[in-house]
Every structure is written in structure tokens, then in C-alpha cells.
Image: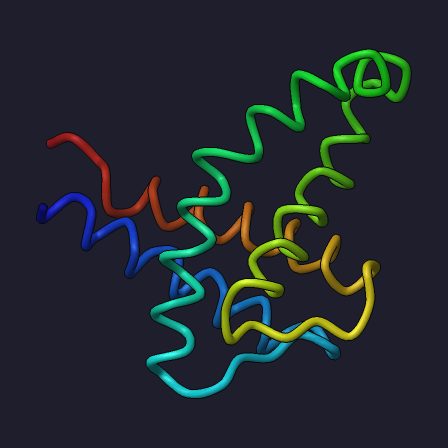
Length: 114
């Protein structure tokens, strides 16, 4: 339970970071941000693996760059199901990049083994 709550908080910080740096990405209130983080975690756990498998040939052809499009799709799905707002698909792709980097950095900071 503690690990799940920590993961939700990391997603909240990552989504907040994306909304702060990218024009066209916003959320409605702290509760909305919390709900968006939960939805984003569920979408990443369920939809992203399916999209990745389906688009494997495109991912190979683009040397992995199509994964950025998949990140944008997961952000769009999250925006459709939560209080996250995106102005365009390009903003969603940029948000996906920021969220991925923020999660990667935050996990590196908080998951260090001593």
C-alpha cells in the first residue's frame, strides 16, 4: 500500500511538472491531479503494453521513436478519463516525454538502495 501511494505521488509530481513546462497541458485542482495520476498509472499498466505490442513493427522501423507517439496516446487516454487537459496531440507527446523523464529521475532519487 505504501509503495502504491508513493507511485501515485511520483506520478502526481511528474504530471505537475509536465503541466508547468508545457503550454496546453493543465489539470483541474489537486484532487484532479491525484485522480489523473491514478488514471495514468492504470492506463500505463493496461493499455501501454497492448499498444506497444501492436505497434512493434513501427517501433522497429523508427528505431524506437514511435514509443513517443505511444506515450502521447496514453496521455490522451488519461486526459479523456480524468481532469487532465491537453490542447493538442503534440502537447500530449511533449507531456509524455516530460512525465517519463520526471518519473525516471524521481525513481532514481527515491529508490536508491543504501
